Length: 636
Ligand code: GAL
Image 1: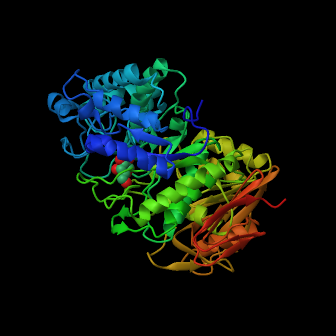
Image 2 (image 1 turned 60 degrees about the vertical axis):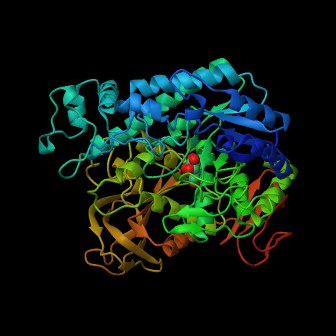
Image 3 (image 1 turned 90 degrees about the vertical axis):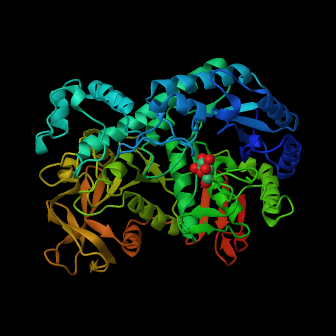
């Protein structure tokens, strides 16, 4: 029960916000959707103020009309609960339900995402509007899926959050002694004598306690998940036939543990907004897609949002040139998405996102953009049958949300960009034509031949055992610098770091040696290291390459390998450049049929090829024109 009900092809459509438009536009919308091959739209994401204009008073007439028109047009509905944007009447009546920033400032309405999932009034209002929607629409023939909320991520440091945090901590640690020990409370006199003394990690005078911050992120993920589950359960109860999901999103501001959340949604859904202004956007899209598929356990997932054309980044809007929307969509579909959905259907005339691209641009249907939307939408039914088999990967990159969160701390052995380190490995593998999965450090690794752990700074005892078991059983483990520097409480793993796995790696790390920014340290015959190196003592491992230069490190091991059980463990004691990772993957014989600018994904008897280059590409017997894509039989 994870396929949007009633749909058996690939999903195509996006956020549809008819309440922004007069009713006469709605019929035109349905006609254009049909022309474009749209079969699923997400309705009502930000409609709370229109659905419940005053507390307890509902106006469903407009939504009845919209759903009726869509259904008559053969378009299925992914109906949202609107809780990501509470109406002004709600926030004025319940100011305590607005989120509080780390500096203690309570935010006000006027944008969106101003809510505090731990505020009782917000929880109650969320249940009420979700229940009202369930009661009215659970049996509606247009309803294919429920879309709870939108992009969970807003953190609140309010008193409500603080109270809920203490309850969460009590359940986790049981005693204050255990909490004080786990948080190393004796440092800077942070020993707590009563539960009520524990606060949310708001702005402090100087550095905060990393264990406290990490637990607060875990707590926030769980608190938001509770809010999701409360709605999911009542929607499910109203009609167990309809799958329920929410759209996950990516960012340092999002304290959501996707491994935990994926287990609670019927279909993993993800919003992909690459931020790079150049061809790295393709890399970011592939990275998002491989993560989403992996969160979904290797199975189907859905690209719930992407931009049809111009993508807004910090540096302004970047156009999608002809064919790029289709290629990005195919990156996702080939990597397991059940279709391609967008934000939003019709470009708004006003509002904060009036300049965001859309499937129907401001200039209407007679545009290059809409013609591409129509062309691509009408291609999808013809390839739906090629997406039945799973994506095949025997390499996994560890994805550790906790390492990402913990390396955001201000005080580390060196600045660590966890996201870039994971993305770098994915990027170099992709350029070598390898499609990789991601895996949780504590998840099942048994189907992989190779597992790569990029700066997996937080390594719990369970994760360390998991890696030991994987390697002993014949797996090839590759870990990069700072892996296993600390445990699940952000406490240092003593006597060599490495999550206590010094016997597995056959090395001890004895010192961290940050290098000056911009200086590269050459490795013998192996490219170069950047920014960070470690002093490594061999304890049985062989040295694969050494540092060629650098105080203290010249002549010392940079990359090592150690046989362990049936497998082997590689250790990379520095931040490698792309060239050095490429060299290492050459050594490990990790190659695949794709290459730079060329995504090739095999699924069962089918091969997907997306050519992002400006030259025609030939893969086996298939010729793919520049900037185009193809699905063909895979050579056997
Ligand atoms: C998403 C969000 C949409 C829209 C979009 C713009 O993160 O869910 O509502 O804001 O970004 O790119």
